[in-house]
Length: 77
Image (cartoon, rainbow, N blue to C red; front, side):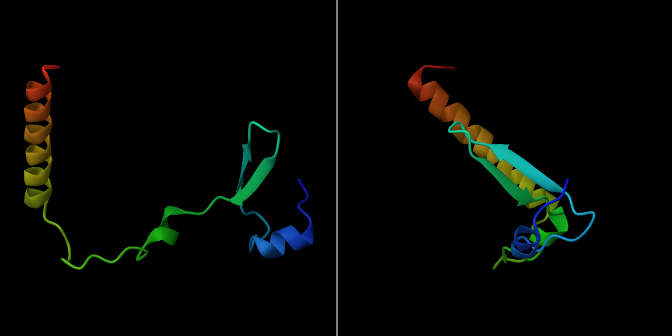
């Protein structure tokens, strides 16, 4: 597929880059560059630093307990 130079420049596309097409209900198509996940690295900074497996496990357990408690209160459990 040939993408016009102005669009390639605007999207910073190079030969061989992958793109995604999205079709809206109104018939408009949108073309976006398909970026590797590595581009997201460093996008969000954590003030607390790295999280341990234990902390993640504790947080998941607390969330599950909270959800179960809410479901019991609403009578949907």
